[in-house]
Image 1 (cartoon, rainbow over the protein chains, first blue to last red):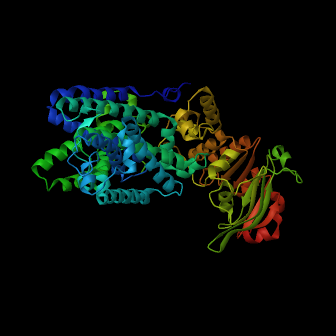
Image 2: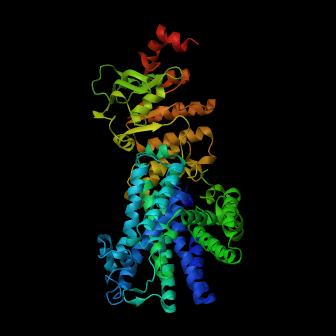
Image 3: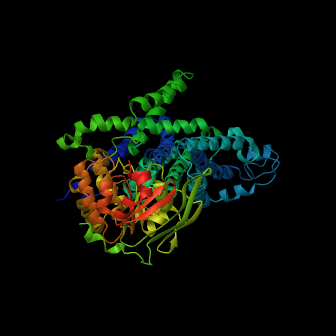
Length: 378
Length: 257
């Protein structure tokens, strides 16, 4: 007897292909046609957060590791990009009024007279692109190895990631001469000679960003449907059973955490390019928690849900904070509580439970096996 | 049935599969396992019995690396296990079933078995793992043995308690360990399930050693080659079930009531 779901493990189910097509249609056709340049750039900014939410689906949703410090990786990726752009904007010619021409303006204001050694690699674009992904991923690896090898998990891990986010913010703010301090790295102009401030450049960057996001969705989907994805779910459920089935549990957790960090870093770099600056306000505790809320609202077990959740929460943020700036944070908190209590699987859970069964209209669709991610771990 | 599976139990066999010597573990001064030594032959079924708190589960925890020994040695086919990581012990050929069924509720029976298939255990290996014919055939074969052939597509959380126990035994079988450790495999089972489990155990012991903790004396008599009785962290008695049953020390602390 052949049971269908046993013998084939397709890369994506038909309904997932549909969701991908819908997402591509929305990002590449509907939004660019419907929105003006300013709004499109805003959506592009929101979509950079979607990279973080995507990483959280793998790390938090699938593997059960709640990180409240994803802003660290988003910020590191963004800072790496910003350092390159800043160096390009600080040519000797542009900065000849400084006492030391050729270094970023904030260094000059802080009486620094030579470029610090760790800024040197960011003179090169290829090295910068490598660093954007590598620096945050390595940092995640170090944190992950230190924590997971010692079997620190759950709430403790969440608190430690939050502490790291706070520490990094303080470090960036405190080391003004090296990092630009509280203002961040601003006045960014060109990428390898290409002016990123023009409307045309912003539109191109929006599409590059969308393309990278879809690529990350595909990578995440590959991980999710591989045996590794099922091991992550198994670990969330019964960590000891996985350990005593011969797996090094820590390595798998480190992998999930590093992957989430790499995604966040790409998002951070795209943020810098599209918004034109990077500052510690995207690194700390508050943005990190907001990013978790995006994933929670969208559905922490759904890659597509996380993207829609990010767009929705950010759209709401922009709309409501324009009209009721002081109420927005309360609204966000209330939204988070409501989602956790009423819709633990977020928008994607609502979709799967109420919308999808009506669309597919197959009598068998309601069987338990047809809803593989239907129930949360706890 | 008993007599047919006895040949491995001859005493004096020098090539022990598992040699536990002077094993001691102390938790804040309390010696949960105190100077325990015993030897398991290849193809032997050894049952550990003893009252609650005798240290039975702790002995299994020590062998599989979940708890680290304070002193003493555990040699498996000549390899010292006390220094190895849990996953290395599993890869050396030691499988462990937990007391409460420990399976992955969110995955299907098929996926539960697939994760235990001994291939692609590294991060990269798991990413590249292919669900090929070998894997599928082996899973179907095991599923048939554990009476779950028709349940492969079901989420494991919907199985009955007995079926969950079988699934975990199946997950161990697919690892094909040379030493299988079972912690109360029939606890909480119905009479019918218990009978089926005994049948299953008789079937799976071929070509491997089994270390079982069990309270059900009828079940122990049915399967054991030799019995080790633990009491307050020490070995109280050891030998065939008949011998142990008549040992006055054992009768006093355990079987008497």
